[in-house]
Image 1 (cartoon, rainbow, N blue to C red):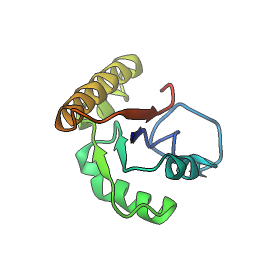
Image 2: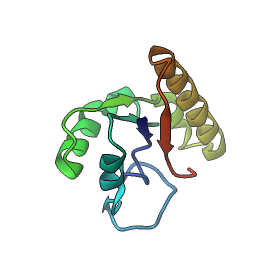
Image 3: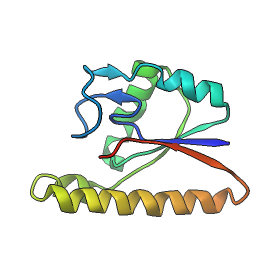
Image 4: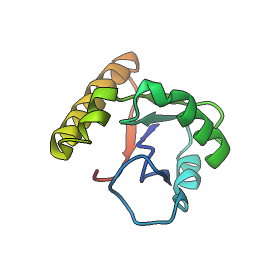
Length: 120
């Protein structure tokens, strides 16, 4: 199985994102261990836009020890929309994640996916 995971409020709590569990900043206890037990490669499906890619990859490496991972990104438009219309931003983020997943799944037609994420 191929593990797909959201980043914020699923793998760690940081400054990006507004929903999810109310843990202190840092990694979500047990998330990475669970992914390791499931085996396979982890792909992150995130609302984070490409302009945050270096920060995202740095956090994946420095905060949770993942040096190599595929990150399916969101758009800056949806992140900026969160400043003026949270509901519209969340809808756009969800739609963008669906588009990114469908493209990714099309590259792996025989794969089975396990998805982890929060409700935000």
